[in-house]
Length: 134
Image (tube, rainbow, N blue to C red; front, side):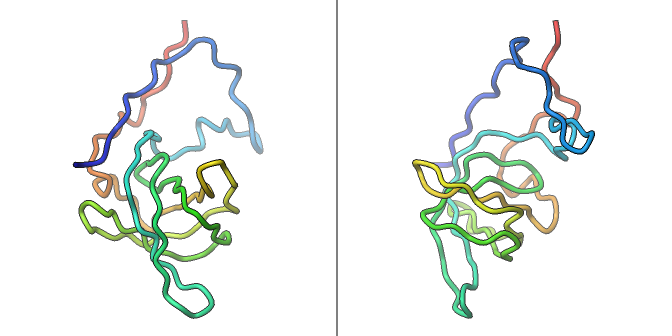
């Protein structure tokens, strides 16, 4: 059984105003569209000088990285390799900021070293896709 893609949410005119960070709209900062997608992955990481494999899954993906959910946290800046459990492909990356706890585990934001849209084996929305304003 392959990864299960969820459908794109319908654009909503009820969304609040876009938040700003350092004068840049958050929705304009993202380099590629995010897609909600659960894919089983393995995080390959070296901790305290020892290689470790951490089972995880994606919460959302884009061509530049993913939000991963795992049972343990990893410090911001940690280099790692993400292995797609279905295809066995691997991509190098790093933890971009401190993971946050959630009821399912730790949410770990990961940026891949090189954009890799084909790594997730899905078609991403067009780069100019934005919610339609009424």
